[in-house]
Image (cartoon, rainbow, N blue to C red; front, side, top):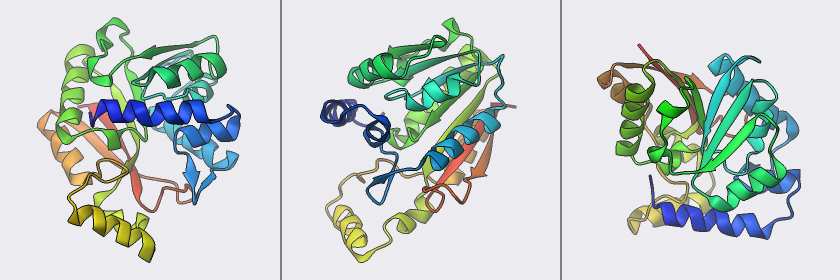
Length: 234
């Protein structure tokens, strides 16, 4: 993971600074576009992408990695048997338990790489807008862990920043200057780690897993610079 303490501190500030309505829940976890929270229609498209990619139905159990304030988790729980959500931030988990917990949802504070997947034996897992907080080696560690503890599994990784399309995000002169300043000063990108599709494909092949790149619905606010991935046991 990338600087766990800084991630916790960022979300702690967001968790205590907002008023806990729908717009605030979206704002807390970065579901914004041009400074405004995304529409209900866009949010529903995010939920649909998770459901369709994992082929979820009312009999399914699923794990949400990096569940944050539980907004996505709670919505997914309406379509499945039960959901277990994990997040690094205790502040966001408290919000999830208070405002976004249905009867078929459990939340836990835990570093994703320390989760004992074997105890749940749940084969379908997703995480959305979380991979940017991972170093390359951390994804490898997570995939090895899933494979060794679960055997067969289906893992949906949603909304991955695409290194080959980074300039599509930094698409104004002001944003480009911001990006190039960080590059010159050798700073970590403010969105975290950007990924090459090929790296994920080759890593999965090395581990004898199957990775499929999924292009996002072009009506999503992130479609111009992010992609989705589905990783399965071969």
